[in-house]
Each structure stands twice: as C-alpha cells, then as structure tokens.
Figure 1 (cartoon, rainbow, N blue to C red):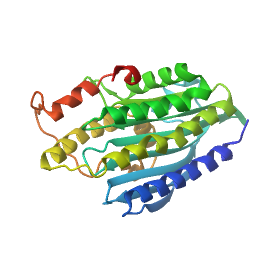
Figure 2 (spheres, rainbow, N blue to C red):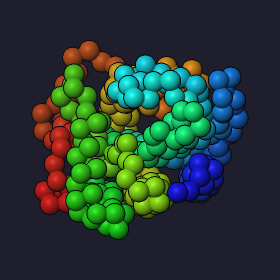
Figure 3 (cartoon, rainbow, N blue to C red):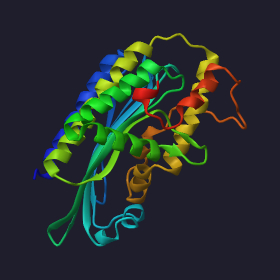
Length: 302
C-alpha cells in the first residue's frame, strides 16, 4: 500500500497543473497564493484568480490537515472511529466564469486516514466533478459525461460510471428546491477496496477534469451576452450558495474541524443576487434550464 505522502505529492502536483492550465486559458489574470497553517495540525495553500478575461473568480485549494478528534459531522456517521486521530488531504476547486454561457464548475479529490494506537483503522478516497450551466448546450453536456464515462472504463466501465453519476445526481440535489445543482458528473466517497486501484481512480478523476472542462471553455468563452443573461447568471449563482451552505459535507467538515474559513468558503461566487418569487418567462431561454435540473441518462437522452 502506498504511503500518505504519495497521495500528497499527487495532489500538490494536480493543483499546480490545473492552475497553469487555467491561467493559460484565461490569458490575463494569475493565481495569487495564500499559504496557511492550522493550529490543530497541518495546513495548505489556497490559490485564487480574480477579475480575469474568462474567470470572474477561480479558486483552487490544497489542504493536508490532521487532528486528534473527528468533528461531529464525521463521527456521527462513523462511530467506530471515536477516539482515533485522523489526517485528510485534498484538492478542491470552484471556477466562476464571467460569461453566463460558460458553466460554473466544481471538482474535488481527497484522501482520509484514521489511526488508533499506531495502527490504521480506516482509510478511503473520495472525489468527483460536476458542471453547473446557466444556459445549457447539449454539446457541452454530452462532452462532459463522455469524459466521465471514459475515465471510468478501467475501473468497472459502465457500471462504475452509472453508479458514480447517480451518486453525483443524488448528492448535488437541493431538496428544498426540488432540483439538481446542475447536470452532474461523478461523485464518490468512502472508496476503500484496494488502495492502489482506488488511488489510481482518484487520479483519473483529478486528471480528467481539465479534459472535461477546457473544451467547453474554448467553445463558450467569447459568446456574446447582455444584461439579461448576466442577471440570470447572478440569480442562479444563489442556488450554488444555498447548496454549499446548507448541504455540502465538505464545508461542514471543514468548519467543524476548525478549518480556515476563508479557504473553505472560497467556493462562493464573488457576485450573486436573490429575487423573491422569480419565475422565468415560459418558453424563454432561462425557462429552458429547468429541464436540465433533473437526473437523466445524458448519453442516451439528449
């Protein structure tokens, strides 16, 4: 079994590669890095790109943190880990483009271990990526899910893709709105069968993110838009805020474990608006989005 440092080395390299690719795609702004340490153990580096030609804000953080006691959000679901020390490392990103025709996106890959009396009592991998369009294009949704399906091929093929696609649909669901956050992708957690195979899958997901997202950036970055499209984008960003603050387990774990609030909340958009009782005009491009905010088999139903 590989050691934790092998995972850490992959994650720091992944953050570097994604930052370089996004800076090249943006062509104007660069990431600013904020290194931090956590009093309870560990630290990380948060990188944020602002006011670019393509991205209004793009945040990507690496963290490697540890502690002697699990926060309530974790210990409640895993009581057998009570009293164990833990260490968790991951890379998490959220990119908020300026153009409303270019989707917001999120990705995360992570590793967790717990030890008691010098012995490992639990370990697992988690991660995934998902896409949140405001004005969906079938071509983009198909590409996104084809990349997801293809990277699953060596790890169970269609069965793995369908299982982790379904998990994504179920996880990124706003129950109080009765809609998905976007068009999904992949999501997995607590993967702990074979270390080498599970680590390889986590790497495939992390490496696959750029393959899935950059072609969409190139297709949509220069699409003309106006005030109407911008206002709708800002309104729909409110749903992103609602999910992250109400349902997201990573946000809850980070805050309850004494994590750095600035880094945890970097996923929130730089500008957003709410409007009471808003309903798009029937038949409008804005109304069309609702049909995409429900689980479906994108590879066969578009």
